[in-house]
Image (cartoon, rainbow, N blue to C red; front, side, top):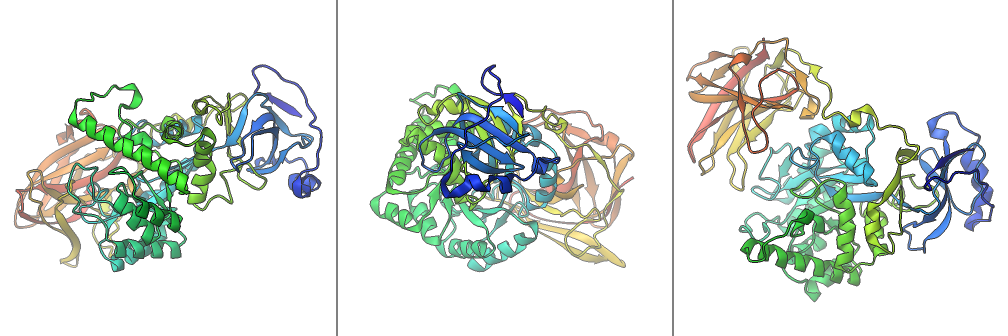
Length: 607
């Protein structure tokens, strides 16, 4: 047998003494393992000598874990199969891979790009995450991208909020659907089904952490209808809910789990009883709310710091009270938000759960078995048991005694493949890239002849308005033009100084793969509408824009690439135009507060 030493320099061939396992598992081993295999699906791996924390509630015990392909087939004192690859893990802890049920893979996070985010989770022993950030159009290309690199399993959450609600204050309604009636809730789930989301995230709480009025919470009837429609479609529902009263409403509506901790006040007995009786879980995301994150020393005299410290104290106390009452506690971080880096925050969340009153063993179960159960994946992962997915982390230490040991990651296996640690192959080249290679793009972007809101490139057009609690209201529709059609954009702008409205044209599905436009010289389109308009290109290296003037009659507009100027922002500095790695083209306008805006577009193409 081939031995991979994972025990600080000690390596030897070892034949484990066979003992009968419960249920006659040993007798079944030859059937489970089969003949020595020649394909990865049949490859047999044995991890020997580790102290196994299986997350079932059993005491840690020294033993062997045998894996065939992507599945665990035996656990305990078992014979190492002939020809198996052996990982000698003496002196190490063996646990299920960690599961973070609340992350955001956003370009504003740290790290900021998909391959680097994936790498951070893999190296932290996090083998499954929920991503709450993405537009449904991007699910399929993102799943394809993730399949080509070393990455955790990623579940994509479809986002649903209320008009003006948290989560609806940025992006478009193809990214976050707005609902405020039971009928709209049911329609939203039907609209999402073709994209095959893995779960639903409902932004139900309009209390903006005490910093703004609650004028956008989702009513209980709408939330209940959303849960019922989601469950009928086989989808779990987690919520953005951060107040005790809204937590009780979520419980009555049948929500599967709170996506945050309750932090406006200590939980009262009646609300706690309602939550316990519902069976609802909670992933408190303490990592995102912790004052003084990443070693910072907050000024306790600052009113905002005082408020943060008070709410964090409520959050910690409510975790302790809810866990003691029997509420399942899962691991969630809100990673990707400011000061909450991917990967390491998942490990720190378990430390914070211990700070809240859980034992280290209970925190580990929260980050494995409970998180899998909340997502209805506990039959597949979350514990070290025969038949489960072989997502495994080896740790130098005993984290069930000292939770800080979770940071001492030694090796990580995903689907039975060693991806981190001694003997692991180098990560795929795609893990070092920051984006997919640019693809060519056809000259015609959209002639507005499709009735399904999709472009000539088969991408979904996006209505693109300003952000914030108050947003401009926009409608786009096809209107006749000659023997064909044009796109009409109509909007009533919000009452604010930076009100804008427009339309965005992704150049590939979900704006996941960039394109190159270097073989073209300009963008051309027909425009009808008075005033100034902005043409903007969104790319991997920056944003570039140019202004055009429209009239009440149709005019042919040409925007040479040489006329594009880099756009500077707080997040990125202006960069020169190269025509490489472009994701979207936007056309829109700014007008005065409360004004109306209307224009028409046709025949948008590169030349």
